[in-house]
Length: 98
Image 1 (cartoon, rainbow, N blue to C red):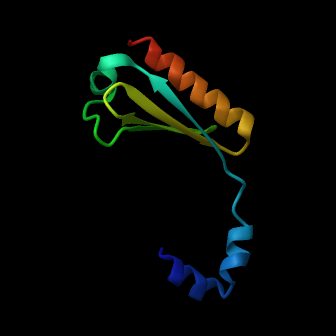
Image 2: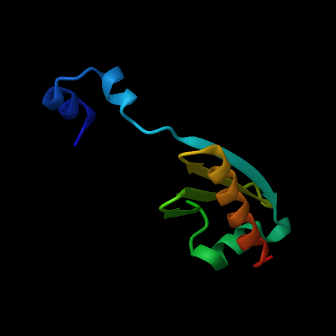
């Protein structure tokens, strides 16, 4: 459903709909992976250009190539502590492939 349809169907204002959304906390890290950053992503997920997105009940982590030697990790969750934990878990997992 598109936003305009949702507004028309509910009769609520955009600010009222936004107030109903749960909080979302995000964090990010730059992970140095040496010359193998893109190769690492390719081994883990196939095509490295679009990165990889991993979602679970706690939140989500996206890993993107950043230049030739780094990976950018973004995590999102309903609280900051969990977002930071997800980011750390993703980094630890990827370091296992370095």
